[in-house]
Image (cartoon, rainbow, N blue to C red; front, side, top):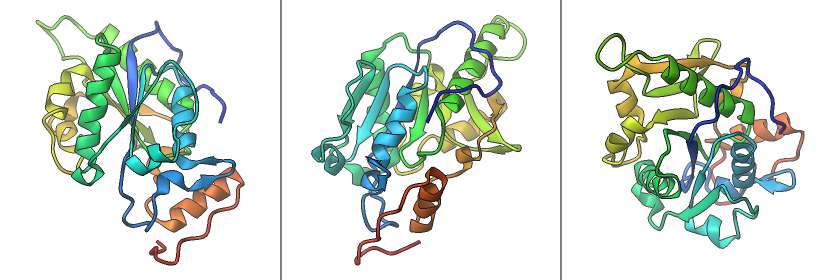
Amino acid sequence: MTRGSEGCTPSHAGPVGAVVLAAGLATRMGTLKQLLPLGDVPLVEQVIGNVLASRAAPVVAVLHPAVAAAGHPRRCDPRLHPVVNPHPEAGQAASLRLGLRVLLQAEPATAGAIVMLGDQPLVPPAVLDALITRFLNAREAAPAPHGGPRPPVAVRPAWQGRPGNPVLLARELFPEVLALAGDRGARDVLARYRDRVLACPVHSPAVLQDLDTWEDYREACRALGVPPATPPQAGRPG
């Protein structure tokens, strides 16, 4: 996918990174969806490639052990920091905590992180750039802490008014996210700060789509114009 514009002109470059959550068990698919082919690349490589085509940096990819054992990610980029979650059964929160820790080690001055779901291969780099621009511009325009509305702590894309993913989390939220457990990600944290979550209108319905079922996967293949893989006999099609 090529990099483009979502109607936001970037301000100054800022230390906003990304965490790609690619350690899920994919129990509904019956196989690791991260390794499903999308043309000549597996799903995990497509997602990571889209993030690297944006201006997010650094990029941490949290991987399932089997994904790492298969040799992914295969690309070499100094911004990319792969890390294996040795206990993917612990849920999404464990992957998010691990990813944020590695991100802070790679860039201690980071101002925020885009949390990219590992099963959204159709989200273009332009959406991530739009989130970063919206975040940086809003923070730059925010008044001093002693008066007026407080600066935003998150930005999420919206297509036709419907909120989607990925979500950009400000550094202020990291302590609460690092205290999460289970498989809910940052949803509860965002709910507590709903009045400080900015919407960023985008032109891509892909922010509402992830690949939870075989039909989702087949639709993604149709969108990319590539043939889908065949579900395994032991799998449970959508």
